[in-house]
Image (cartoon, rainbow, N blue to C red):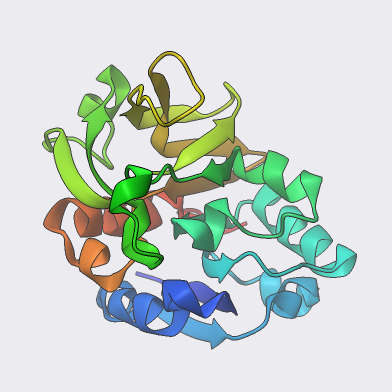
Length: 235
């Protein structure tokens, strides 16, 4: 079998531990036959001579910015069949300055609701809530999530802005709380795929910490999602 090429692009906000998080998944990719290249800058996307040979991009770049040239290279690669996969803010809260990137990914982090103000202490745990990831009917059949059940996490619960081009494999529901300004439960995607040109995109919103990434359900979904997204037939 011909080896496939994976590009891991990491950086941005250090709170999501982009180096440690991506290092968790590189051995899996190598075991699956990928040659893995790691870049600490998204400017690699602008190098068409590199991108033409990439079958899978795993991105972990929270916030930060992307140049027009780098984004054009990323979108061109996906349209031509390169897969794009990631988790949490490394893909769903990247490049807020670029609306075309938000359209490409299909879901943008808006917030993660916090605990009751009286319980907040000023650290990141203020946003750790116990919530359920609910598989959709599609998710119960899709190869990324088939055989799994709804599961519960205690971590940041992402509220994302999205559109219906996504194929949603799992959702999460934000309840009504007296200290929040919304007035009915809000259900948003937690795991989704998206087809763009010839390429496939996979996004999982859980993944704030290494602890969450070690959760058996989360890790299984991310590993399957990367394989699903990858180009399977060379041009």
